[in-house]
Structure formats: structure tokens, C-alpha cells
Length: 178
Image (tube, rainbow, N blue to C red; front, side, top):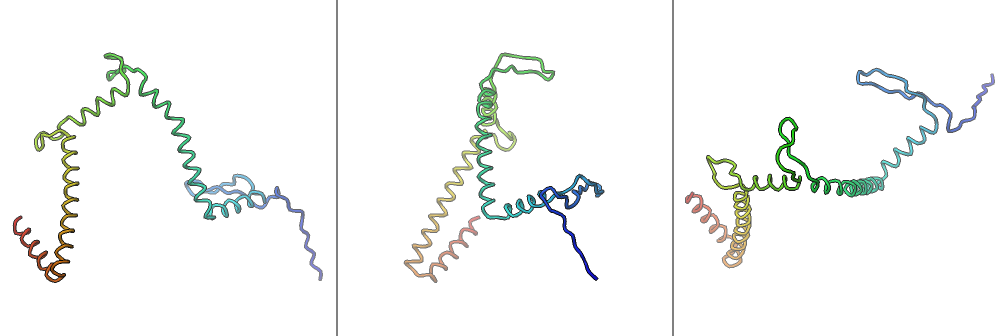
């Protein structure tokens, strides 16, 4: 018995299967046919995506895209900020004088910084509250650094055993003062 196998010529346009699409219900539909070229391109794409150089390339392309978008949008934003506009009422009818978006933004920023947020508890403007919180944070960091420096100095002068006792005593005294 003789088995004869005949292989036709294979080219990039040789069809090797169907392209199957699955919709949201799970139903399958044939969307076309896949060729050898499609398979080769898919394998090349998968190999490129797995290569470590691809991540750096993708990041660089993303940076370039972001820079180009910013450059294109920057003049539009500048124009929108400087172009005169007229305030409107609820119905879209023009009211008042012409102004710019930049002036409206500045007015709103002034309101945020000067308005009192919670007049029942704290009657200080928002900007005062922010500044006070930042000053407290800066002093707290400075005080913590000073305490650490004092601990090191005590440890060097008296030895670690005595310094631990001093620290424990100081902490007990501070807790008792609360």
C-alpha cells in the first residue's frame, strides 16, 4: 500500500482558518478568513510586545503623544482664557458686562481663599486654615528631629541603658500631663 501526500503551494494569502468573533451574549460569528500573513503578523506582534524594549518604546511614544497634545492644546487654552465672554443667566441670556474666563477663575479663587467654610465651628478663612496646618506640620517635623537629636546625645553621654530609662520616664511624664 502506497500513501501519497500532496501539498499545495502555500503563500501569504493562503487561507488557514476563520476569524471568529464572540458577542456579549457568547454567540460566535465568522467575521472573515485568516491568512498565513495574518498569522505571521499576529505572532510577530506577540513577540514584540513580550520584548523588554517594547515597554520603553511604548513609554517614549506615550510621552511624545502627550507632549504633542499639550503643544496643540496650549494655544486653544490661552485663547479661551483671554477671549471676552459674557455671563449668562439660567436661560442662556446674556447678563452683565463682558469678562474673560481668566477673570472668572480669579474671582472664584478669591472666594475660596477668603470665604469662611464652617462659620459655626471655625470662623477663619480657608487660606488661614491651610497656612496654619502647614506651619504646624513644619514645626512638628522640626520638633521630632530635635527630640531624636536629644536622644542620641543622651545615649552617647549616659549609655543606652540609662537613656532608655530617661526616655521611659519622660514618656510617662508626658502621658500624665495629658
